[in-house]
Length: 186
Image (tube, rainbow, N blue to C red; front, side, top):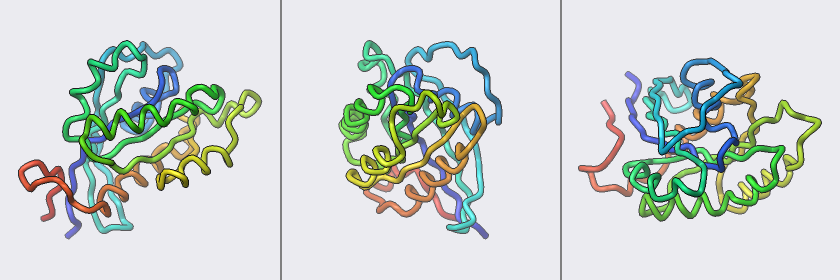
């Protein structure tokens, strides 16, 4: 019988990088080009199989508002997070340059380093791309994160980003006290 895991994860990155689009594509297999800006946070839940680990994983995805003015509001939403997707828009260099700020905010508010996957989103916009694959991989490697290129529009590698993160969380050493652990094996 497969092991059962339940994880809370956070979607991190500047406003309009596609965090909500990725979440909806992952949880509902839906894309809507007319998203409303996330105020504070929103969340969704999805259960999936992780055959590489003979496990089932239920992920509670917290989509955090990316605008700087929501930083205070975001702080409480990190509690209990076991991992996150660090998302940037390949057509906007500033969103890539801000990844360190998001990483630090996550580590500070969770009280520890958590597994993160760097997600280069909007790779379908080939003509507008300004951040290269090499730059993204180099950043991920430097920080010992994994790297995925995705498109919420086409669905390319969206599920892969979440599966990669789930696998990392299953493999991560359990550093939380048992009362706070977010995973259970049956």
